[in-house]
Image (cartoon, rainbow, N blue to C red):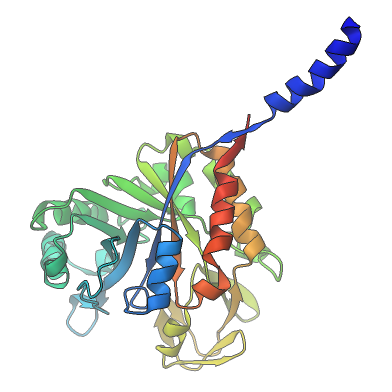
Length: 345
């Protein structure tokens, strides 16, 4: 009888020991450009359905202009709240690494202040207290870039409470070489842009096996981390039949705005020498455009889950465009988050 009773208890204990319990609390946001901050009802409904708590908007970029031999702001989008969404709007500014290579010491000394002044002009009505800076700096420009970050923080009026920086995935691993930016939070973009020789029809820059090795020290980075999960399309630049560089994201709007491009299906041909996303392209190059698959995106949740040890986790869905409500329904994304929000115990 006792043996029979024990035989009933063992499966029960096994079940209880493997039960699912509540995991980290997930808070997520959306990041995009002009298309995101529009009056489109479908866009706002999509954000509401996802319970997104912040909208990160690419507001302007700063690059070095050869004609004036100085830094100039480009693609400025004034952030004026045209519709009350109840969501917090945070500007994102993109800085070219060429700024820190081409500007002289006098220009660099005033660059942070000038960026802050331009930021004030385009965000005046929102009285913002947060800012995200996106720059793929290099080891030899990190000191200049980090100094500009500190200058932006101290010179922006009325003041920045949370300054964040976007960090490429491999920078996260090699911080001893590239440095860790002096910010309150980093956005870690889960895209591998190094192992391009391995990319093919079934493998992409967000393949779990490409991402996992870089997250080993997720909990030991030393700065608060928000995970950036890409949606939409990525591109592989091919030159003389060899892959050259991977673009983490390419939107149709960017393709149409590049006069040197022509497109047939998912192949973009470079008709004239051009700059695109900080990369010099030659006539005859082509970019293979590939959508991120739902399975690859979903697989990222399991990779994140394996390394996260926090009670809360911030996830930013990036590269939003108006096709997302149909391509990535809110119900589907919430189900993935629900899966991430449960853990085995």
